[in-house]
Image (cartoon, rainbow, N blue to C red):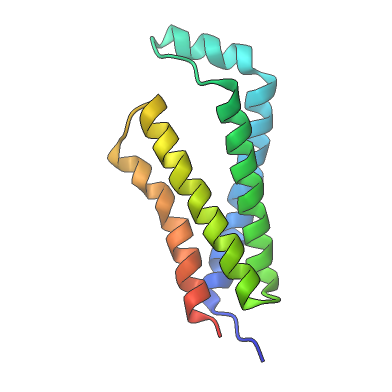
Length: 125
């Protein structure tokens, strides 16, 4: 019998909520790209490239899938695979963000949920 940890269940529900918010904001950012670019230029910053908006939308979808698979917990191996893909997406996002916008210590906070997700997977049987 498969036993899912409570941590994995809680983190998966949080991932689902945050990913829906991220997907919706990604869709709105793509739709209103001209307004976003004008805002960046008004602040004296370089606007983000269009592909970055689509990448963040893709990471949001991966996050949603990871949350759903963590709640369902059909297979330990499948949760590990989607968790690893999710962690890789977040790390790539951090690297791209460091290049485009600049690195800040607060950017490392985005690693909390992937680490907790993988720790919840580790605690599950």
